[in-house]
Length: 121
Image (tube, rainbow, N blue to C red; front, side, top):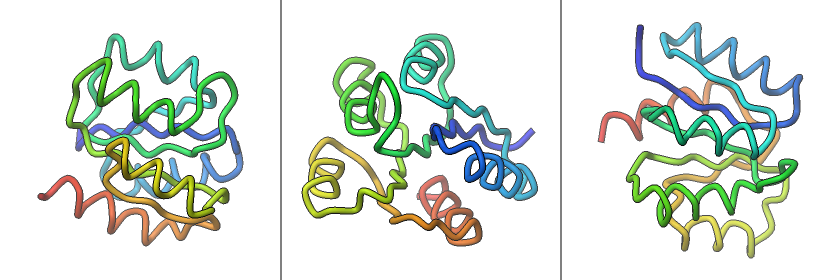
């Protein structure tokens, strides 16, 4: 199997599209549809990269970045995807340690390029 991607997004349609494209691109994908699942998953697994929406039930993408960087002390690359692309969300994401930010609608091809770029640094 290829590199392991944690995909966190509560939009089932978008998640299934991105999941399909990432798997087709050779990645092993685990999808979580809410922040509680993400947190639970991360206590047992260490993905190579995390792709997360900001607006999720129970635990936002911003809280996820904080959890990964400050509680788990991981340097795992994090790409945030969000339709909530207002300046404050973008700044918060980067200040807390996100590696990249993509505004929805997300091009699956662009996501693949950005994931590859983060993993090959």
